[in-house]
Length: 65
Image 1 (cartoon, rainbow, N blue to C red):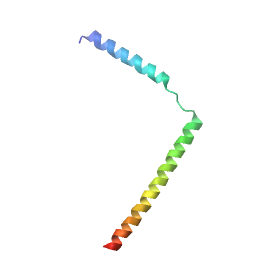
Image 2: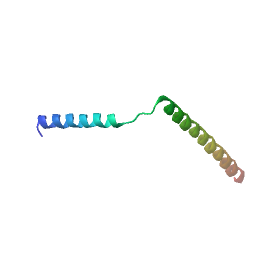
Image 3: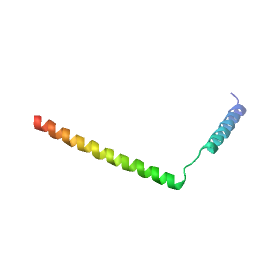
Image 4: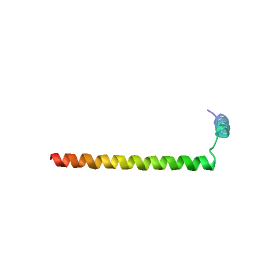
């Protein structure tokens, strides 16, 4: 490949990338805050559930041993 072909390919790739970024619909601030809060709360709840199950199973195994 010659240098001209590489530059043209890079320019075409960059234009395509810019075109795709224009198609993205970004969420507004309220939606972003609500969804971030939801993900955080679900992660914390699942963490507590997993930690509780781990402690129960650990207690059960220690009881058997």
